[in-house]
Image (cartoon, rainbow, N blue to C red; front, side, top):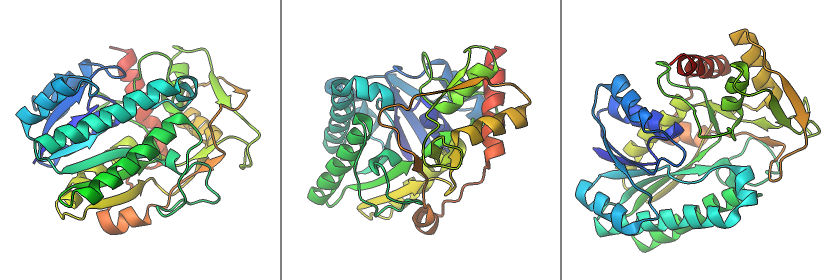
Amino acid sequence: MKILLTGGLGYIGSHTAVDCIENGHEVVIVDNLSNSKIEVLGSLKQITGKNIKFYKCDLCDFNKFSKILKKEKPDQVIHFAGLKAVGESVQKPLMYYNNNLVSTLNLLKAMELCDCNNLIFSSSATVYGEPKSVPITEDFPLSATNPYGRTKLMIEEILGDYQKANKYFNVVILRYFNPIGAHDSGLIGEDPNGIPNNLMPYITKVAFGKLKQLSVFGSDYNTPDGTGVRDYIHVCDLAHAHVLAINKNTENKGLLIYNVGTGKGYSVLDIVNTFIKNNKVDVPYKIVERRPGDIAECYASSKKASKELGFKAKYNLKDMVTSAYNYEKKHTNL
């Protein structure tokens, strides 16, 4: 099948592109390069041996994007594109609402014009807000504690309404937990523009002296060591969940929703200490105030994804921290 990836040069998108190609799919990537790098395209060719068709385009430009979709006529779309930093969304809510909602509405309109009815949407565990308990199942109440999370929640509602109105439309919503790690080749990994918002790329940059020290946001949460607990999943495991979702969409089930995590919670200091131990490096850190919009504890039940998609995480925490370190090491030596 031909799969079009919006935001396909980003962290999760690039790893999913590899998995799609390795499973026999043709990949087309659309990305505006706002939080990704064109060099990733060359890395994807090195890994897969394939020339991947790429378009530089912002989905908020409906005319340009709709022409691309009409020309390519993909069988399915995986929608990664969107702004995704929790802290930034609190500071710039209008930018997040405009970008994330308009780009998705444009995507749906363009898909309708070219009669493409299969979508996989990159959602987030943030749609559960501050959960009353863990592990989190897909039927938990939904809410959000920050504008980024609210855009994901709104998009899920839009997709639900659209699917009810169009019986031919199939959508798999994947609620990600916390992807970390990098491809085994070390050629692609998490490399955001500017100062990282996510934990792992910040740790790796501190380990290599690119940043002075790590800030740990809050040590007074109701968790074993006081730092926030999250469900960290290897990005290659998460990428493979999308290939399984492609297969599921062909069954024409309408709307399906799955958590994608490991079902285990690790604290920030668990991650830092595992990174230090396994990579034999120092990571200086300091405890600072909590970030607005953050919650204490969040990890998944992935039983539904296991049962219906056949999803099972293969990589452990050691794999995650060593692959992230190896990516940064290779990237630093370039």
